[in-house]
Image (cartoon, rainbow, N blue to C red):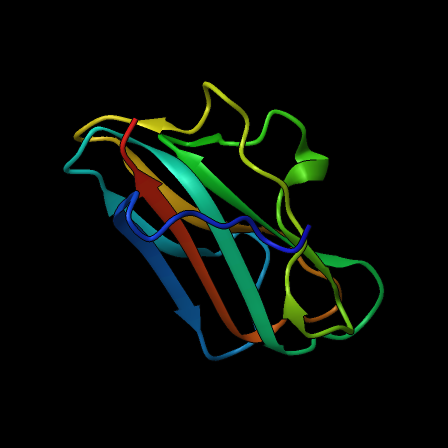
Length: 128
């Protein structure tokens, strides 16, 4: 499934990220402190300009430095030479909950020779 979606009615906060230049491994695209109690209910990532080389561009959404996916293979990824919506699955239960004061960040885990450019990402936080 390409990305995960959430009902607009359920969304209470969105952590947004955008990067015009080619992304690099370890780069933090967004960092946001939560002011509400909730759950990450949807993640979407889009790469408009392809990277180069072999492999994938892989992102991670973290709550207080911990991935919201229990299996790394479920984190959003897109083939380096492709463009469009990244493939990912729904975050793992129990790892996607947030409390006021928690830090949610969107980070690049890996890229191939050069990462995607004009990359946009969003993590929607809803009620729980």
